[in-house]
Length: 473
Image 1 (cartoon, rainbow, N blue to C red):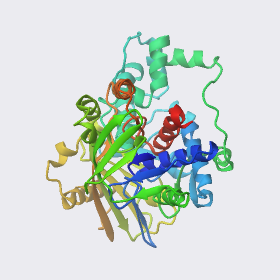
Image 2 (cartoon, rainbow, N blue to C red):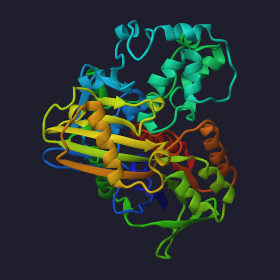
Image 3 (cartoon, helix red, strand yellow):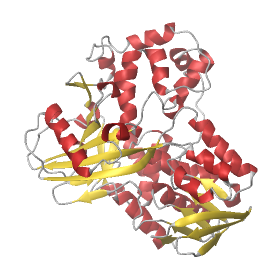
Image 4 (cartoon, rainbow, N blue to C red):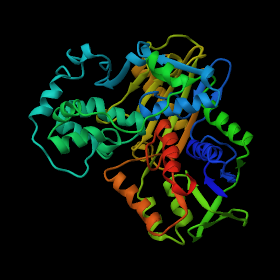
């Protein structure tokens, strides 16, 4: 038996790919998925009514690259093709992405023409950033923060007004702490190997492409032909994990909710004992852990304190989410929303204009994101939902000039919800996996703690981990 810890998207995807591997290799492997709560889907949660959808976690998915296309392949296999709602490259939600600087909203350039024009808050056209990269001397490093890297290669304004708010939007983190390998590994390697990003880019043009070839589904091909920018699911993104969970149950994966594991004991290379909160012990041949690194650290601490210490070194942040529904239409201009650079010292990270980027929304629907890396600093240890709501409304009224109060709202405090890939993260993860290998432990790690925080990353992490585990090939 193979046990999967966690019923979030990482655990569900792991079960999905193990199931596919079972079928393809004519195996008869029993799969047991264990989820501590009464819900599968992790941080993906949708509140649905006839007038609006409140997304408490992610709301859109990018279709680009091998990881994005891989997710679309899964979507088609699950029968979700007709339920997807794409946003094309010419949609306002794709073209109009803003930042809030010096008490004003500024639209970031979204095409090549904009790169050659001066756009506030930047003092020069963005093309000048490339000249800055060309003249910078080489600096040899093992890793760096994404902020330092961008400031060094492209200038402080790009780091402050483009990269820092983008990191807030992706992982609610501080660009001065996040590893450059998190989003710009290729650019960093160009700098280290060729002395600069532009030099590395020019040399890469003459190299043949390599890497995994992915067989594309009709849905994945359609996304390329129609130039999708992002997409969501009609009725809420929660439809994805719910459908995936039902698919697993229909294919005899044993899904156990309200089953909290409190300790893991490794007996030998093919036996592991899982002790749950009721005193029952489950026996498995192998475990896939998709739960947060800090949760796994608690489970292995007794038998493997060194492994526990490594796992606890992956930090997480808490995010406040305030969903707002206004009955009036068009209270905001057509756009995806805006982010706030950390140098503005704002209590909010940004605002998503859901009624523009999601279908089936009446009135005006907004989502305010608060805290992240700065949650405790801004709100203290006793943050309440009322406090977050009051701050969100104060900022909304000031920035968007909305006078009225929402007809409906929802506040969620997502405690330790997003891992932070701080400098040295990938070396840290390698050390964790090396410890597991050296000690011949029957456990594999998947999920957002290790190989990427986005939906596509989590799905692809499960696929590649299972592919790499030769005992299940």
